[in-house]
Amino acid sequence: MTQRTISRRTSLGLLGAGVAAATLPAPALRAQTLDKFVYQTNWRAQAEHGGFYHALATGIYRKYGIDAEIRMGGPQQDPNALLVAGRVDAIMSNSFSGFRYVEENVPFVVVGSVMQKDPQVLISHPGVGNDTLPALKGKPILIGAGGRSSYWPWLRAKFAFTDDQIRPYTFNMAPFLADKNLSQQGFLTSEPNEIRKAGVEPVLHLLADYGFENYQTTINTSMKLVNEKPDLMQRFINASIEGWYGYINGDPKAANDIAVPARTATPLAANDERQDYLRSEIIDYDQGVPVLRPHARQDSSMLATLSDSDALVIRPPNAPAAETGDWCKIIPLNRLDS
Image (tube, rainbow, N blue to C red; front, side, top):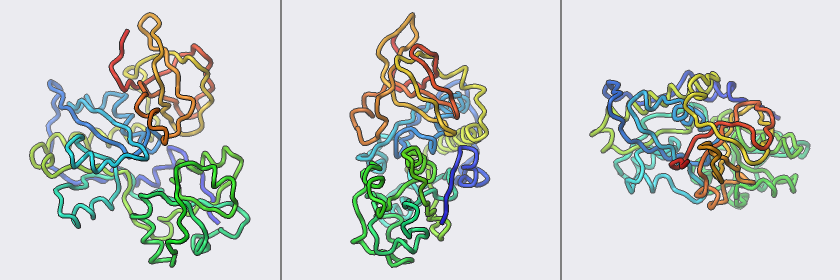
């Protein structure tokens, strides 16, 4: 049985020595003109994306001459479709997308990877005989659409799992919590923390420990951008690397100066060991200072919540509870009024 607890700093084991990136022609930093660059993530803002938001909040992208925009993903969104349509410059994905680009003969490429070890896990209840990954053979598992085309074929080949084990995963953990015989997919740094908060100490099966080799949290882009703007692509990679080093090492030196101060209109709960970003709406301004209200639920299946967010509230690791009217720092997602 494997039980894991991971913090932002211990995620270094997943990141390896740093960000692996393809070598493009050497860039020259330019401070005078900012080049627009849109990076589309594959999920809502969360700790697993922290380095990119750190680079945005602390001005690292601007230091590299980039006017960066980080767009959040969601459960019904296909980042690859946005990339193919030219609506974004790069997307977050995994190494399987690179194989698909080659298989389908499309002009896109994976140029960098943040996580050298995939944090994908299967999660089980304790004390029901599901203490190892092979023990899950023949038993029901909640699997999302993405998992069915990435790690599930590997589970079939290596452990003789069968498709009739699959139950739809809607990123709602209530079915898992209600049924001790049910297992589900997750990220080592995400779902297990929520399950613990519900009073269950999960049994975690890290697929990488069983031989599943996959780069995660990649930077995918078009060959057109690589060929026509290699300097811009390399600068984005370098700035992102710097952002991840700052995020992992807990260096907030520029964030306090560049992130926008605001006040919360509702109390905020104390945060755990992971830096978090709460999607929020700005409901008023007090002498030019945004007054915001975090959405009551941060569930990414609520597409209206994704589209209606005006800002991300930065909740540092182990931040204490905040009362109504307390100061906080935000990353604006839209133009601020006053």
